Amino acid sequence: MIIDSAEVIVTSPDRNFVTLKLTTDDGLTGLGDATLNGRELAVVAYLTEHVVPLLLGRDAHRIEDTWQFLYRSAYWRRGPVTMAAVAAVDTALWDIKGKAAGMPVYQLLGGASRTGLLTYGHASGKDLPELFDSIRAHQEQGYRAIRVQTGVPGLKSIYGIASNATYEAMDGVRYDHEPAQRGARPAEEDWDTRSYLRHVPAVFEAVRAEFGPELPLLHDAHHRLTPIQAAQLGKSLEPYDLFWLEDVTPAENQEALRLVRQHTTTPLAIGEIFNTVWDYQQIIREQLIDYVRSAVTHTGGISHLKKVLDYAAQYQIKSGMHGPTDISPVGMAAAMHLGLSIHNFGIQEYMRHGARTDEVFRQSFTWTDGYLHPGDAPGLGVELDPDEAGKYPYVQAYLPFNRLHDGTVHDW
Image 1 (tube, rainbow, N blue to C red):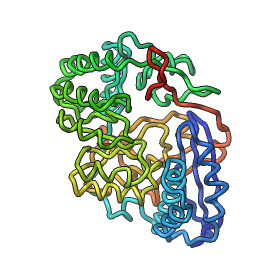
Image 2: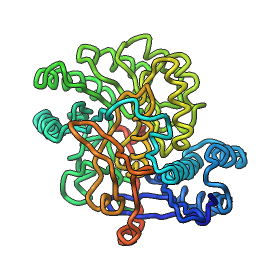
Image 3: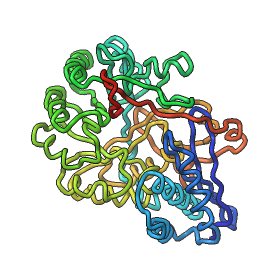
């Protein structure tokens, strides 16, 4: 089963997506997600100019061999651009293999370990009334676990608040599904750590008082804290029984998590900007985290992320795969198949894509009572409509960035 053609498709229905489409000599097709939010064209160039010529004529059945070839033969290993490109190839090959076998990918990975995937949604508000309304709306949609992000008094626009002026400026309405703003420059937001640390515990106290002790609550600090600040936040949130506290400190400084662990029992999730098992080696071995946050799209595909999660399973660490809308429906489907098959699944982030995206990517998954299932169509269960994709050319877009009150650039 020989790879006969490879096409890199860029489309921007609700945001920019990069998709690799492989076709075999017997007509089977496979899709892989190569979207890297805000740096999409870097992956397009990597695939088009360097990877596609190496794929033509290869045996599509040889997934592991192809993965090792693309990773090792480049010499320059790891990094988000390389690993997103490798992930796209790997995922597309799994899609083809599933179609050749007449089975969904999760069956090829060992079959289902559960009947569905617990999901969490993103509730947010500039103030408590708006936040409460958002939580109720997510519960009405069926979410059984809720990520809580809140505005901070004195700050105009910060990460994770859908009604921020930054996001409303795009189209004048609440914009839950994509923080990247289209335009020639990234939006500038503001930040003050001390104000945030004072405010967030009171928010969770109010949420627990309003919604009770049973609702699983999550929160994302988004890499903005120093190690001691992260430890302070985790300790201050212990009374509110979080499902997890995410990205409490920049993930590159892995030893910092030792200090956080010394001071808090709040579960920690990290890794959405990690790309390989080598990024996780120390923090998994030392049990410094509780959930692996990587996406299939950015971590070398199904093959490599499964190895990461198998390693994590030895230390009772679970999956919490990245799943916002900068992961395309193809990448989300890959996460669902992997999550359904592994034993140490934890929870799946799930933000609904926009209606135009759902027209471009036709999907077979189901979402019922807060649980996802990838469906039983052969392969990944996603097909790309080229006519719909062609309606939406690439539009330059950037994620926002932060500045402190004195003008210093800070982690967003």
